[in-house]
Amino acid sequence: MWVKRFSVMGYGFVLFGILFQNASASQQFQSPSKTSDVTGILAIQQQQNCFGGAANCPQQYKLYQQNMHHWVDLTGPVDQGLEHYLVRVSGRWADAQHSRLRVTTITTLSTMPYHQFLVDAADRYTLSHYPCRLLWDKSFGWAYQQGRAQLVVRLTRFPDHWNSPRLLLRFDARSQHLLAAQEVNWLAPQCTKRRN
Image (cartoon, rainbow, N blue to C red):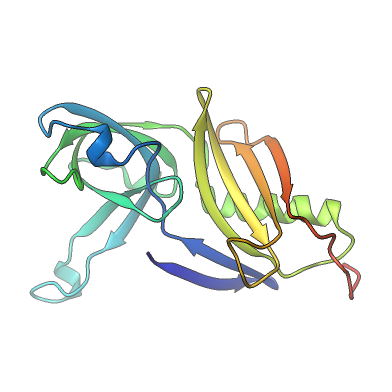
């Protein structure tokens, strides 16, 4: 698992690596020759340590699952303009471990790249519901429920990220509308500085 921490405009963020939906790939897809549909966030990475230097390194295409901890490598034609979009990929498994999928088609399930949209939407929500600017750790994910693709951001202000009080915001991946805001073990923010 990889974790990336960074700060923008006084807000802290945590980006966790993502994967698919429901069962593991090996349980869900049994035959490498069978066409499979896999949903996830598309990421493009530059391969490192190639023979002949970095300029000769090919790009790697990865599809991250819901919890951003696991991915499947993609081979074949991939539209680079879909990076960070929620997509459904149809293809055939290139290996028996179901870790590499040969792309046949890609269907877009979201209308925007997830990261900047969720950062901005979370900022708007918290600024309209809490009386001060706060440092939030954000982690991102997605869901596909009842035929609806969702982009999800999880916010907390505590170091024990997974068990701490948190706010979950779910947005429709197409319309960008807020679907639900869920406070879990929530503690009302104690403001020491009023927002501007």
